[in-house]
Length: 192
Image (cartoon, rainbow, N blue to C red; front, side, top):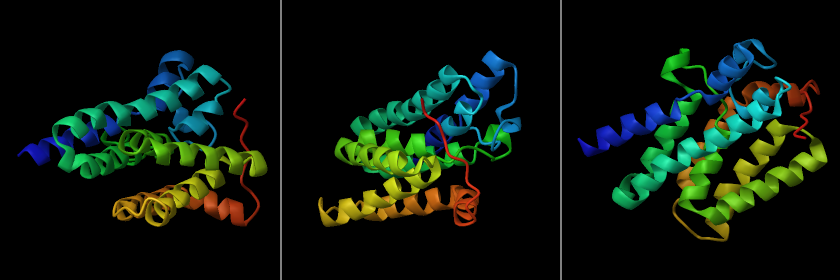
Protein backbone atom coordinates (compact mmCIF):
# COMPACT_ATOMS: atom_id res chain seq x y z
CA UNK A 1 0.00 0.00 0.00
CA UNK A 2 2.84 2.33 0.92
CA UNK A 3 4.48 1.81 -2.50
CA UNK A 4 1.22 2.52 -4.33
CA UNK A 5 0.79 5.80 -2.40
CA UNK A 6 4.37 6.85 -3.24
CA UNK A 7 3.83 6.01 -6.93
CA UNK A 8 0.59 8.01 -7.14
CA UNK A 9 1.93 10.91 -5.03
CA UNK A 10 5.10 11.14 -7.15
CA UNK A 11 3.24 10.94 -10.44
CA UNK A 12 0.70 13.61 -9.44
CA UNK A 13 3.38 16.01 -8.15
CA UNK A 14 5.45 15.42 -11.30
CA UNK A 15 2.45 16.15 -13.49
CA UNK A 16 1.93 19.71 -12.20
CA UNK A 17 2.43 21.73 -15.44
CA UNK A 18 4.17 24.86 -14.16
CA UNK A 19 4.99 26.22 -17.63
CA UNK A 20 1.31 25.98 -18.55
CA UNK A 21 0.17 27.50 -15.24
CA UNK A 22 2.61 30.44 -15.27
CA UNK A 23 1.87 31.29 -18.90
CA UNK A 24 -1.89 31.20 -18.23
CA UNK A 25 -1.61 33.38 -15.11
CA UNK A 26 0.88 35.99 -16.32
CA UNK A 27 0.38 36.11 -20.08
CA UNK A 28 -3.21 34.84 -20.35
CA UNK A 29 -1.97 32.48 -23.09
CA UNK A 30 -1.70 28.75 -23.57
CA UNK A 31 2.00 27.77 -23.76
CA UNK A 32 1.02 24.93 -26.07
CA UNK A 33 0.25 27.56 -28.72
CA UNK A 34 3.73 29.14 -28.42
CA UNK A 35 6.98 27.98 -30.04
CA UNK A 36 7.29 24.20 -29.95
CA UNK A 37 4.07 23.81 -27.96
CA UNK A 38 6.00 22.15 -25.15
CA UNK A 39 5.19 23.09 -21.53
CA UNK A 40 8.82 23.05 -20.33
CA UNK A 41 11.30 25.79 -19.46
CA UNK A 42 12.94 26.11 -22.90
CA UNK A 43 9.61 26.80 -24.55
CA UNK A 44 8.57 29.04 -21.65
CA UNK A 45 11.63 31.16 -22.50
CA UNK A 46 10.22 31.49 -26.02
CA UNK A 47 7.31 33.47 -24.58
CA UNK A 48 9.81 36.32 -24.34
CA UNK A 49 9.26 36.54 -20.60
CA UNK A 50 12.39 35.52 -18.66
CA UNK A 51 10.44 35.38 -15.39
CA UNK A 52 8.13 32.72 -16.83
CA UNK A 53 11.03 30.81 -18.39
CA UNK A 54 13.21 30.72 -15.30
CA UNK A 55 10.19 30.38 -13.02
CA UNK A 56 9.16 27.27 -14.93
CA UNK A 57 12.70 25.90 -14.74
CA UNK A 58 12.94 26.49 -10.98
CA UNK A 59 9.50 25.10 -10.16
CA UNK A 60 10.08 22.02 -12.33
CA UNK A 61 13.39 21.34 -10.53
CA UNK A 62 11.80 21.84 -7.11
CA UNK A 63 8.79 19.68 -7.87
CA UNK A 64 11.28 16.80 -8.03
CA UNK A 65 13.44 17.85 -5.08
CA UNK A 66 10.75 18.38 -2.45
CA UNK A 67 8.92 15.03 -2.71
CA UNK A 68 12.20 13.15 -3.20
CA UNK A 69 13.67 14.58 -0.01
CA UNK A 70 10.62 13.26 1.83
CA UNK A 71 10.93 9.85 0.17
CA UNK A 72 14.70 9.73 0.66
CA UNK A 73 14.45 10.18 4.42
CA UNK A 74 11.28 8.18 5.06
CA UNK A 75 11.16 5.48 2.37
CA UNK A 76 14.70 5.35 0.96
CA UNK A 77 14.09 2.01 -0.71
CA UNK A 78 11.58 3.72 -3.04
CA UNK A 79 13.74 6.65 -4.13
CA UNK A 80 14.26 5.37 -7.68
CA UNK A 81 10.64 4.39 -8.28
CA UNK A 82 9.52 7.77 -6.91
CA UNK A 83 12.01 9.54 -9.18
CA UNK A 84 10.79 7.63 -12.22
CA UNK A 85 7.15 8.41 -11.40
CA UNK A 86 7.94 12.12 -10.98
CA UNK A 87 9.66 12.11 -14.37
CA UNK A 88 6.81 10.21 -16.04
CA UNK A 89 4.29 12.57 -14.45
CA UNK A 90 6.06 15.56 -15.98
CA UNK A 91 6.35 13.99 -19.42
CA UNK A 92 2.81 12.50 -19.42
CA UNK A 93 0.68 14.75 -17.17
CA UNK A 94 -2.86 13.62 -16.49
CA UNK A 95 -4.08 17.25 -16.57
CA UNK A 96 -2.92 17.97 -20.14
CA UNK A 97 -4.03 14.78 -21.91
CA UNK A 98 -0.63 13.20 -21.20
CA UNK A 99 1.30 15.78 -23.29
CA UNK A 100 3.93 17.35 -21.05
CA UNK A 101 7.49 18.58 -20.96
CA UNK A 102 10.72 16.89 -21.92
CA UNK A 103 11.78 16.15 -18.35
CA UNK A 104 15.18 17.83 -18.22
CA UNK A 105 14.46 20.17 -15.29
CA UNK A 106 12.83 17.33 -13.35
CA UNK A 107 15.88 15.19 -14.14
CA UNK A 108 18.14 17.88 -12.64
CA UNK A 109 15.97 17.88 -9.50
CA UNK A 110 16.25 14.09 -9.31
CA UNK A 111 20.04 14.27 -9.64
CA UNK A 112 20.31 17.03 -7.01
CA UNK A 113 18.42 14.86 -4.54
CA UNK A 114 19.97 11.47 -5.25
CA UNK A 115 23.58 12.50 -5.95
CA UNK A 116 24.49 16.18 -6.11
CA UNK A 117 27.84 15.31 -7.77
CA UNK A 118 25.94 13.97 -10.78
CA UNK A 119 23.83 17.12 -10.89
CA UNK A 120 26.97 19.27 -10.98
CA UNK A 121 28.36 17.11 -13.79
CA UNK A 122 25.08 17.36 -15.69
CA UNK A 123 24.97 21.16 -15.37
CA UNK A 124 28.64 21.59 -16.41
CA UNK A 125 28.25 19.34 -19.46
CA UNK A 126 24.95 20.99 -20.38
CA UNK A 127 26.50 24.48 -20.28
CA UNK A 128 29.67 23.47 -22.13
CA UNK A 129 27.64 21.82 -24.88
CA UNK A 130 25.30 24.81 -25.01
CA UNK A 131 28.18 27.30 -25.24
CA UNK A 132 29.53 25.39 -28.23
CA UNK A 133 26.27 24.55 -30.01
CA UNK A 134 23.54 26.94 -28.72
CA UNK A 135 21.12 23.98 -28.89
CA UNK A 136 19.27 23.31 -25.63
CA UNK A 137 18.10 19.93 -26.94
CA UNK A 138 21.59 18.71 -27.86
CA UNK A 139 22.92 19.94 -24.52
CA UNK A 140 20.22 17.99 -22.67
CA UNK A 141 20.87 14.80 -24.63
CA UNK A 142 24.66 14.89 -24.18
CA UNK A 143 24.43 15.82 -20.49
CA UNK A 144 21.92 13.05 -19.78
CA UNK A 145 24.12 10.52 -21.64
CA UNK A 146 27.10 11.50 -19.47
CA UNK A 147 25.32 10.54 -16.23
CA UNK A 148 25.06 6.73 -16.62
CA UNK A 149 28.57 6.64 -18.10
CA UNK A 150 30.05 8.62 -15.20
CA UNK A 151 27.99 6.64 -12.66
CA UNK A 152 29.27 3.32 -14.05
CA UNK A 153 32.91 4.17 -14.78
CA UNK A 154 33.83 6.70 -12.09
CA UNK A 155 31.40 6.11 -9.22
CA UNK A 156 31.10 2.39 -9.98
CA UNK A 157 27.48 2.31 -8.81
CA UNK A 158 24.65 0.00 -9.79
CA UNK A 159 22.35 3.01 -10.18
CA UNK A 160 23.61 3.50 -13.75
CA UNK A 161 20.74 1.21 -14.86
CA UNK A 162 18.29 3.80 -13.54
CA UNK A 163 20.12 6.60 -15.35
CA UNK A 164 20.10 4.60 -18.60
CA UNK A 165 16.30 4.38 -18.30
CA UNK A 166 16.08 8.15 -17.81
CA UNK A 167 18.46 8.72 -20.73
CA UNK A 168 16.23 6.58 -22.97
CA UNK A 169 13.21 8.62 -21.84
CA UNK A 170 15.10 11.87 -22.56
CA UNK A 171 15.89 10.55 -26.06
CA UNK A 172 12.20 9.72 -26.50
CA UNK A 173 11.06 13.19 -25.41
CA UNK A 174 13.63 14.79 -27.73
CA UNK A 175 12.87 12.60 -30.76
CA UNK A 176 11.53 15.54 -32.80
CA UNK A 177 14.55 17.66 -31.80
CA UNK A 178 16.86 14.86 -32.93
CA UNK A 179 15.16 14.81 -36.35
CA UNK A 180 15.51 18.60 -36.62
CA UNK A 181 19.17 18.42 -35.54
CA UNK A 182 19.87 15.79 -38.20
CA UNK A 183 18.11 17.93 -40.84
CA UNK A 184 19.83 21.12 -39.58
CA UNK A 185 16.44 22.65 -38.81
CA UNK A 186 16.68 22.88 -35.01
CA UNK A 187 16.28 26.36 -33.50
CA UNK A 188 19.06 27.76 -31.39
CA UNK A 189 18.08 28.94 -27.92
CA UNK A 190 18.91 32.11 -26.06
CA UNK A 191 19.08 31.71 -22.28
CA UNK A 192 20.02 35.31 -21.52
